[in-house]
Image: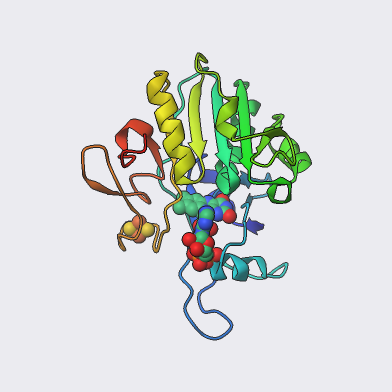
Length: 238
Ligand SMILES: Cc1cc2nc3c(=O)[nH]c(=O)nc-3n(C[C@H](O)[C@H](O)[C@H](O)COP(=O)(O)OP(=O)(O)OC[C@H]3O[C@@H](n4cnc5c(N)ncnc54)[C@H](O)[C@@H]3O)c2cc1C
Ligand code: FES
C-alpha cells in the first residue's frame, strides 16, 4: 500500500515504523492503529508499506480504496545503525521483509554490499520477487520451509558463520531467538527488529514491552523496535 505522506517519506530512516489507523470502523467501533515498517519511499513523497492480512486491523486497511485516507503517525522508533562501508546481511522472515526493502534500497544506492535472505512458509506467502528486485536493486535469496519455492529449509541455514558482515534480522520471535544463538556462538554482531503488538507506538500504553538482558521491561516502540540482540532476554531459548 502506498500513502501520500511527504513528511514521512522525507524523514524516515530504515528500521523505523509508523502507526497506521482508520479511526472508527464501519460499525462505529474504534480500531486501534497498527504498527507497520516503512517499506519504501517514492520520489514524489509517497511512503509504501508491505501489509499482510492477519486480522481485523490489516483487513480493514487493505480494503481502503484508491484515494481514501488513513491516519499515519510517524516515523517512529529506533532505526538500524550501520557501520560505514561494512557489508550487511539482512535476514527476513515473512513480513519481516518490509524494513529490509527500504534498507536495501538505500544502502545499495549508496554502494554498500547488501545480502538479503528472505524466508517464508511456502510459495503462496512469497512477496512479488520481481517487485522486490525493482525496489531494492538486490537479488533476494529465497527460502521456503516446505521447499515449494527457492531453496528448501529455514532462512537461517543460508548464513555463513565466518562472514564479516553486520547481521540484521526481522521476523517472528523464534527466528530471532535462533539468530541470537547463532550470533553468540559465532561471535557475530546482530541487530533485531521485534514484532511486538503495539497499542500506541509512542510509549504511553505499555502494550509493547520486551524483557531486556538486564531484567528490565523496555518499550519496543521507543527503545526499539531495533535492538542489539545481546541487549534482549531470549528466555533461555538462545
Ligand atoms: C515495528 C513493527 C513493524 C511491523 N511491520 C509490519 C509490516 O511492515 N507489514 C505487516 O504486514 N505487518 C507488520 N507488523 C505486524 C502488524 O502490525 C500486525 O500484523 C498487525 O498489527 C495485525 O493487526 P490485525 O488487527 O490485522 O491482526 P490481530 O487481530 O492483531 O491479529 C490476528 C491474529 O494474527 C496474529 N498476528 C498478528 N500479527 C502477526 C504477525 N506479525 N505474525 C504472526 N501472527 C500475527 C495475532 O496473534 C492474532 O492471532 C509490524 C509490527 C511491528 C511491531
Ligand atoms: S506501543 Fe504503547 S507503549 Fe509501546
